[in-house]
Each structure stands twice: as C-alpha cells, then as structure tokens.
Amino acid sequence: MNWLLVVVGAMVGAPLRYLTDRGVQKRHDTVFPWGTFTVNVVGCLILGLLFGAAVAGAASSQVQLLLGTGLCGALTTYSTFSYETLRLAEDGARFFAAANVVGGVVAGLGAAFVGVAPAEALWA
Image (tube, rainbow, N blue to C red):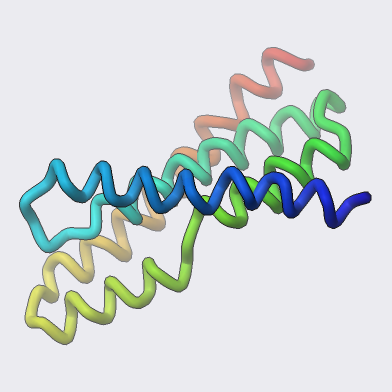
C-alpha cells in the first residue's frame, strides 16, 4: 500500500513540475532557470509544512509518503538544478550559475523553515 501512495503523489507532482516549469519560464526572458527554481522552492515549502505537521503529530506516515516522498519527490528536481547550473557555467553565464546555486539553496532552506513554523503552531 505504501508504494501506491508514493505513485499517486508522483502522478500529481511530475506533471505539476513540468507545467509549472514551462509556465514560469515562458514569463521570464532570461537564461536563469526560474521554472526549476520555483518548483524546488515550492517543494521545500511543502516539505517544511509537512515536517512541521509531522512533528506536531498531525501528519501520518501515509500522508508523509503521499505528499513528501511522492508529490515533492516528483515536483522537485535536483538533477535538473545541477544540469542547468552546469549549462549556465559552460555557456559563460557564471554569475547566473552561482546565483542559481546560492539562491536555490538559501531560498529552499528558507522556504522549508518558513513552512515548519506555521505548521507547528497550527497543530501544536
């Protein structure tokens, strides 16, 4: 049963990642990978909320599998983040490559921390 929860979450997360990435990237005329940046930060926020809910006892292991492993696992993408960063560096856009790494890590961690606090407060 656990694997089915992961599959169902991924069935939502993967197309959501693709559609979000394409939609965001279309709106920005830059080499910076805003689509991937967006899905990764949103995924970190969801994981932060989920973690806070789990710590407070409000998220069962099934919800964690469905949303954390399934949805967020398919929504976020470390491989694309790495590929796009390397591509930027190889194309001579080293500033954007560095901004992608620093911004992605800082924004992702920040989003996770922002998600934890209200979840813990809500379900504490």
